[in-house]
Figure 1 (cartoon, rainbow, N blue to C red):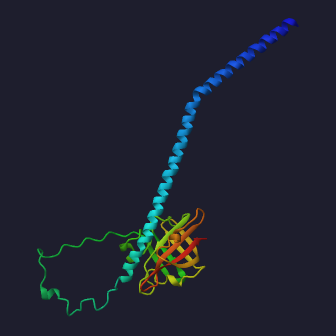
Figure 2 (figure 1 turned 120 degrees about the horizontal axis):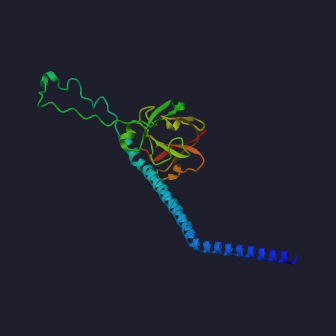
Figure 3 (figure 1 turned 180 degrees about the vertical axis):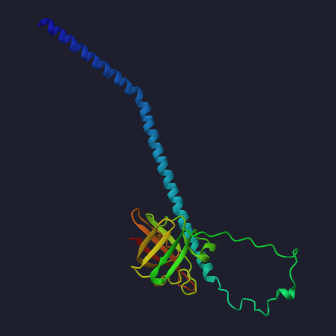
Length: 250
């Protein structure tokens, strides 16, 4: 029994020594690796913070561009209000217009060069409001050229159909039913359908307001609702405010 006991003690002592050695080795590895691990962790955190900062900057830049476009609508609406529709008086009469036979056929040397075709406008969607019998193409970007012929999507606002607030603007022309001329007839509960090349989105009007041109709160949004904001000038003649139709996707 004495010999066996001594053997056990020696085995136990050897095991403890081994465990102690392993523990010391492990501690040494941790001490050696800690700076590298800490550096790696700090670098990862730095990268995450930098990515978040850059993303926030891009969001702020996009938001500012959207606000700039909204602000730019003031001059575009003013130009639309000042535009004069061509009248019969402006068109030359048959008697006043010189005929080709009277002037003679232009020679090849004097014939004007054919005018270049204007760049093609491609609609990104159509907007329909059945309650006012409206159907319009929607172009990307609030420019004078686009707003003469269609409604426009403020390109730095949310894409149509996505979570956020997609803003669409158009002139109110003096011709009945032209562009957003009848937008003031829209009522809460009316449906608005926007059809893109890939999908169809149906919104329901929940609020109508008339605001100052400086009121940018109409572009507000949250991270859960899919909103659509229609913008035009008000009143129809000598506009001083903006008529806003707020809608949410059902």
